[in-house]
Length: 114
Image (cartoon, rainbow, N blue to C red; front, side, top):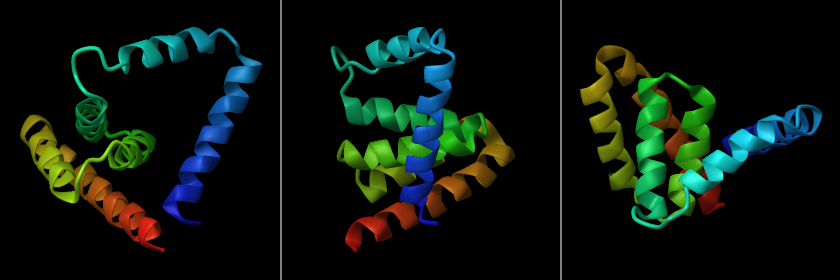
């Protein structure tokens, strides 16, 4: 399974969960309003979210926000720079997840090339 397929499957499962537990829709609304681009641009917010995903060791967050950062126009170099800052803030454990994020970045970039 490609990383893009994995992300699509996760998003589908998330949607099914929200359908079954509609109370979660309030959280989704909060996320959407927080991600609105009134002061900080969307790309920057996705890079911030990626760094936090690395520091909190959230595999699905790393996949989601790496993809979203690429979609928002982040370059390979900007994402690598983001991973460096995540390691600064999260130390050794963040470095292991920065590696996961780097592998995710390379996989998603390769999938976009085909």
